[in-house]
Amino acid sequence: MKAVVVVLIGLNLGWIIYQDFKERTISLVALFVLFVLCVVYYSLALQFRELPVRIVINSLFAGVILVSGTLLVKIRRPKDSVSSFIGAGDFLFLMAISPMFSFESYLVFLNTSIVFTLVIYGILLVVGRITASHTIPLAGALAICLIVFVSLNQMLPFNLFEEISWIYSIQG
Image (cartoon, rainbow, N blue to C red; front, side, top):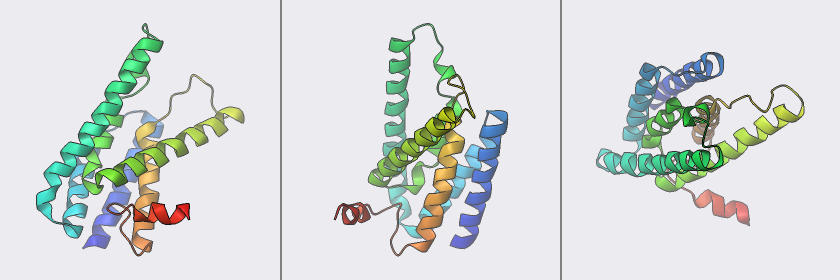
């Protein structure tokens, strides 16, 4: 059953990646399906009663990021609209994936994914494939990173979505 859910999550993330990169918008249906699949994925691995707390904490953190980003944009460029920098689909994507992660793992995922996205964006900018005015399809980029996380999680002997002790082993 878990393998079927993983495949469905991968297909749904592929749909989100296509929409965000090609159409620059994400269907609410795709985000709702992703949320449901993430809840099912979580419930197959852990106790269901912890789910509401997990969703609230991770979504509140995503909200803090959104509000902080909004304030930063408004301070630095008061005449620009916030929607030209971050879309509602990006925030809804962060909320949709929140059931999959413990808070610590959510922080690790967001940080590594955003750094990876910025590095790729910077490389594309330097080689001239995009211009500085080109916006980043953040939800699509995070979806690519989530596919990598889910794939790694299937191969590793520990749960990337729950345990962060593997980070300490990297530090030596």
